[in-house]
Image 1 (cartoon, helix red, strand yellow):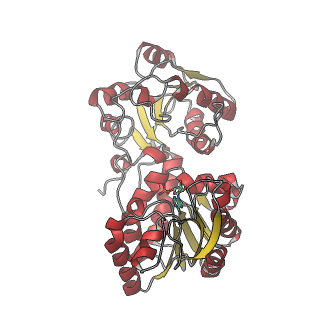
Image 2: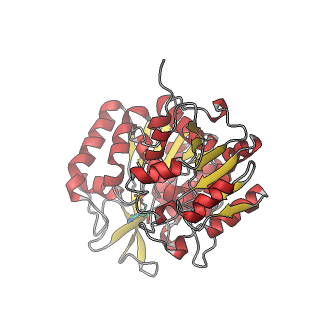
Image 3: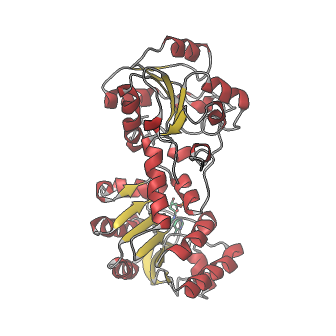
Length: 399
Ligand code: AMP
């Protein structure tokens, strides 16, 4: 998919609005705990500064739901950008109000302004036309570099694009890279290609699984979603997470895999606990016989060994969703072992954002992955075969 290229724009000395995704995680003290998303946007910002542009940056942070909520202010983000760019960044106290407008008007070439949290405006998530227009009026050019939010038709992502023609809008380098990576993964992966799919529920990843089936050689299932498949196979799953309304869909996926010759792997053992808590009693059990009242919260060591063997010959790995409740140390071991193995492999390794990105970063193997997406939800929608609303207006039209 060819996107409008930032390098084709004649932006020299002009004002440019860059929609970024600075929705970074914060710790309990309000410090940014992972600035990957900010670092990933620096190339596009620097490119615009090198063109002597006046740069207006905009992002959301958290879900303030249309109200000004201090803990979602972009103050710490502005400081981090300033640090990374090694130049001053001015933060407006509102999004499209008097302060923002005055600061945009005063913004000179090579200066950087960050607007306050876009979601302080209720219209942002409603794709409000007036808000889109007011945001668009701030600049001559529009760049979308916010992959993580491109699956949302919001004012600063979709609505705003209607105010710029093809010579005045484009994808930033990060957005382009994400789309290229997932495009290649889906269209022409180096084979064998394995998808490791985990996380809580089948429902969240059903479409992605169906779309992946004809494209992969192997699927390895982990996490809570495994139990719907295991139940459908007639196993005792105890009190594990299950979606009874999706048992038929689970069967359909297994049938399709068989029909297409895709090797489909489920956990053979699990770490089961009496309750969903770190201090719960836990034990290893075969996946066939989880005792009544016990819930599987991680894959067991036999599954880890099996999955290692399954992955040994693959050339491309896509990983989306943890193998267990990785937030609790006691149930993180399966995910951690798989993460180390994937990181050490010579395959092209793609991590699909969200929890999986968080988990590989926590254990420090993020640098060893070939690519970590900055968008969990957005990458999942790409894997479902959808065209994202924030990307559609930036696709180069065939002449
Ligand atoms: P998702 O957002 O669907 O990728 O799911 C991620 C969440 O799944 C994480 O918060 C995990 O704690 C959770 N999860 C993984 N394995 C299990 C499990 N066996 N039972 C319950 N939750 C799980």
